[in-house]
Amino acid sequence: MDKVKKASKQYFFEDVSVCEMCHDDVTSHKILGQRLNQSQGIFPRRKSGISVSVLKCSKCNLIYPQPLPIPYNIQDHYGTPPENYWSESYFNWHPDYFSQEIKTVKSLINFQEGMKALDIGAGIGKCMISLEKAGFDVYGFEPSKPFYDRALSKMGISVEKLKFGMVEEVEYDKDSFDFITFGAVLEHLYHPSESIEKAFKWLRPGGIMQIEVPSSKHLVARLVNLYYRMIGTNYVTNISPMHSPFHLYEFDLNSFELLGKRLGFTIVKSKYDVCEIMFIPKFLHPIFRKYMEWTNTGMQLTVYLKKVV
Image (cartoon, rainbow, N blue to C red; front, side):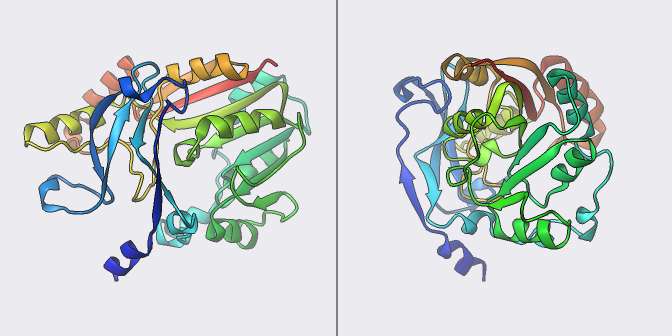
């Protein structure tokens, strides 16, 4: 069964000529190693499959695949029902969900009741529920058909508020939102800078865009890569362009600083979060957590961008 599923995924491969975020020529970028189309584990020599090169931009530190694998059918990546990932409790909304992010954005936009918000990659709609309960007039869109269907049928999201489609397909009026969020979405998009540029057209001047992405400075990823080198392979753990969770990019704060100069936004707040610590013995987690907090080498980078043009 697994072999049939793997064979059903068909890709075309797009050659990358410039960095997606800063437009630096890729000929100067460092090749970090190779990434298989499946989990590599601790003995990657025992695995076989298709691999792509993983590069790191020498100017903004963006990590990306070369070439870029794009599925012919987006549902091959994101058409899996959410029940296959999580238990029934996943569908329970909690008041704390997205609460810190809402508190931050309210302080940045001088919040007034009824301000409009857009959730890009809304999933099953839990973030939309939190924003609505916080006083926003909320809209969203979701490209995964099973997740979109569950948002309507299980979470009670209105079909008038939630669209089905990809960022490349949907449209909204110019300058129509006060707040836009890309929550754990941008790393899945084939051309993130183009998606940000399009979304900024929907954001009013002075509005805030919040983006959560994997960090290219992640300490544990660097240690895993060192292990792969020590056992004599050229594999890396960065990104996962052809297997779950289908991450295509890892970002650096500099990636957004340079993109902001081109698109006309400023970074008004940023932070690194350690998140889950994987591959490290549990008794060492407190030490690693403190070190990653101190050095900003955690798994996730969050930025708040303000539209100034």
